[in-house]
Image (cartoon, rainbow, N blue to C red; front, side, top):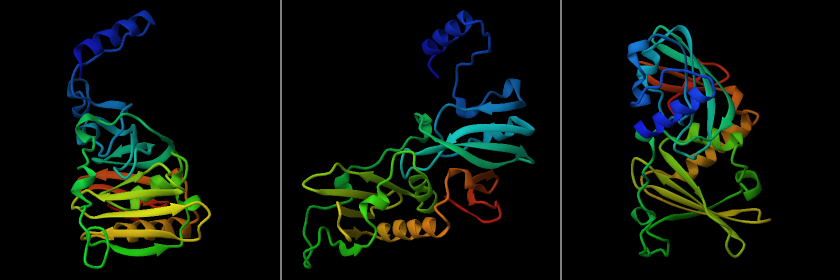
Length: 248
């Protein structure tokens, strides 16, 4: 994308004894001039697999790339086999890469979601209040855990933001990407319940909690049990069987 970076990369490759063709351009468009390719290997995080990559990969060829959702930065390497204009395959290990420029998220500021006013019932911005029995130790998992990845697959158009702990409480925020729905769960260490507030057209925490229960109910599947299919109908993700798929 950047000519000076490309020149530097080419010089370093030459010095190391490697002489690939270095192309300056938008990688999302592939490089039709040398197609079809046996392999397309990406070192940039994707939210959608570019159709050009599928078109430029020969039948039986592979696309290997980091892929994930906007829910978190947690991606996983997917290995897609191309056949008849469709690419499909399973995920492997979790990874995190800088995202493709045209697919990076620009989230509105917090104030665009949560108003500072108080409703007649005392809730922030008219939010509904409830509690959840899911605890912090169950929900807040390490960065590369399967749970974060799975929640992103099951709760579309949502972003999770985990705040720092303050005075024994850890808020976790959820923001909708298609409207201004939001939710906040405040976990406290050792507490049997967490306080929930949510507002907007969607009840985001209800969706996230349902996704968590789904993940637990299916045996807490890791990344390798999930897969991705990309074709004319768009992107579909699946668990174990490509026939059991849904839109992420």
